[in-house]
Length: 411
Image (cartoon, rainbow, N blue to C red):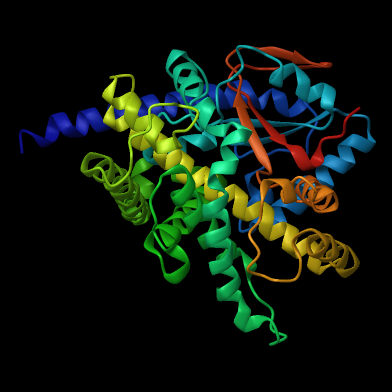
């Protein structure tokens, strides 16, 4: 019993400190309801009610209509407040430029915090600092375009497997969810090319890593839309923390197994240990840096987690939307098909080459236009560390500048 009193006092102090911080921010950001353009906001809850119970498609439509409304009034930003958090969306390139061109405003927004337990300090969620610069410099060689040639064998092999999986639908006339097939193919590609391992996700439709990523991302969206989930006790009491931890365990175990498998293959001589960073794959560069004490084991795991997710998730989204867009524009789909046949022929077993890929001019333009219209990563965030004037409006420190690329105009 004597132990409970100090514990309860400590818990009470944490709650008081959290509430004090939130009340202070609420008082600061409430003033912005009148000084920065945006829809009417409740004095305490802000714009929470406008999004309550809405799905992502409905939320997107709310943002679209609001952005168009305020742009027509000549405004270059719009504001939404959720309790003690202020989110500002730039509507023009000029309003966006001041933040993106800043060498100091690199801090990621609050929604990224949900991913810290997964990626830790990986380059995707860490905003700036010496550690971030060191990791970026170390990993840059793995993204060199010349390295893609060495991965073509993996691209061809995994693409043929995806074609085999889809072949049963060719003459069926059925609607197919391409996202699921592209996602598993992309995971096999990223593991084979960047990690030097084979996981056969395409033959395993209920792959636990894929399912865990889906579940974790769903929780992340729910967390971003419900301010109450920021209170750890509420999140725990609803059973959501347990669910999140289960997803984390599955994802980290998978990447841990990938790392261990590659280490074992190198140690046994099954694969030759490469010494040139230009020729090393992503994981080998990380492992060699670990041997040189540049990266810790935890650093390696975090970067592998980051690359595994970002490498297959965004690619899947981009290619799935391209398929969707072509399905809605059969004339464009036909032109893409004709270009592919003119370069690679009609034999589906023909190997794709670097030379052939360089000739896909029309297909490349279709992909770029698809990504312009349906952006794989629809929003980014920067949390301001300094007060900043953008046009005629003053943005307070800790304002989250949310960059929705699909609603930005160049002027």
